[in-house]
Image 1 (cartoon, one colour):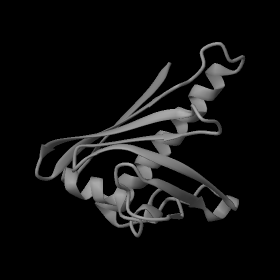
Image 2: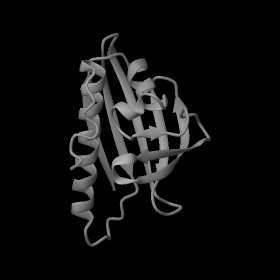
Image 3: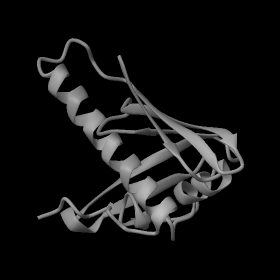
Image 4: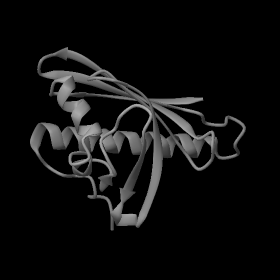
Length: 143
């Protein structure tokens, strides 16, 4: 089971890529902070200050300006997330997020997948706002 989410962003792929891997930029659209620059083989700690929460991701693969693959989750298996950047021109890219590892036998699989899709759409919307307009929408929904 997987969840696929896509959005067009009017920026080149290298700018979108850097927004994820640069610990100073990720706090403008997704997590409050990232412990260090994302590189293949590293374990990165991501923090949400608004929820006083943090978690680790394991970077499995990085292809400069094209792809980021990481593992996250509460147990050893977790979910695998693949971020693919498809540059359409020097001023626009399609970003695709594919999260895999959902258990189709879970009683609440539909609500899990809907919540997951909502999270990715919100993150991509915040990324678009940050890169295209310089606005920080990241914590806008926190009450």
